[in-house]
Amino acid sequence: MANDGTTAATGDGTATGSGDTARSLELLWGGGERPSRGPKPGLTLDRIVTAAVAVADAEGLSAVSMRRLSTELGTGTMSLYRYVPGKAELLDLMLDRVLGEPLPAPVEEAAEAAGTDAAGSGAPDWRAAVDTMARSYLDNLRRHPWLLKINQARTVLGPSALRGLELALGGLRGMGLRDPELIGVIITVNSFVEGLARTQADAAEAVRQTGLSDEEFWDRQRPYLERAMLSGAYPMMATMAEDTFSADFDHFEFGLRRLIAGFGALVRERAEAATTA
Image: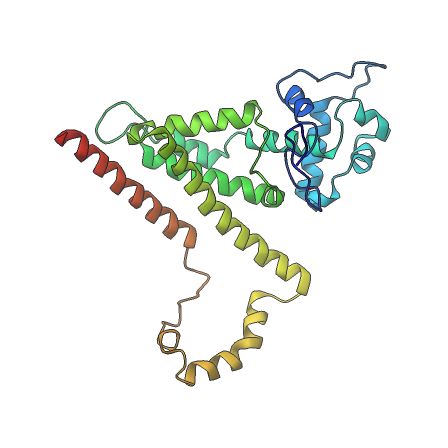
C-alpha cells in the first residue's frame, strides 16, 4: 500500500483508488475539468469518460486504454493526459458516471408509484425502495458488466455515488433501523444482486469461451450424472424433482422476496419493542 493512501492496482488494472486519489477527487468534484496549459480544443473530460464507458460496455474493461480512446475521439494520446492522469483515475470517473445514470423507465415508474408505507406515515414504502434498489442495480450490471470486474472496496466517492446513496437511504428511512443497519440493508441487497449477476455473466462468458451452449454442456455430463444418481450414493439429489434446475425458475425474484420478508421481520421486531418499552 502506498503512503498516500492509494491501493495497488490488480493485474488487469481494475482496482479503484489505485491512482492519484487527490486528482480523482478534483476531477469528480469539478476541480479539474480543463487542462491548465495549452489550447482549449473541443475535447472535454465528459467526452473522454463517455467514450471510455462505451468501449468498456462493448468490449470489456481491458479494451479501455488511453491509446484506444485517442483513436475513438480522433485526438492525440498526449491530449488525453492533459485532462486525466491515467487509466486508474479514469476508472474512478467511469464508476461514478454509471452509478449516476438515471433509472431505466420501468424501474423509475415503479419507484414513483411506490407511494407511502401502509401505516400512512408519509415515509416511502421501504419494501418498494428495496425492490427498486435491487432491480435498478441488476439492470446497471447488465448494461455495464465490466462493473463486476471492479474492486469497489475503496471507491473514490464522487457526486453521483453520494447521490445514489442519499436516494437509497431516503427510501429506507421508514424501516426505523439504526444507521449502521440501514447501510447493512444496502450492502446485503447489493451483494445478493452482484452474486446473481456475476453467475449470469460467468455463464455467458463460458458459452463464448467454449462455444458450447448450456444444454450441450450438461448433455455431455448426463450419462455420468445418471449413473451417479442410480448408485445410491446421493439419495437426496436422486429424489429431487426433474425441474429442480430448470432455467424457468426465477432465482432473482425468489431471493429478493425472501430478503424483503427477512427485513420485514426485523422491522416488526423493532416496532414491537418500541411500543412495549
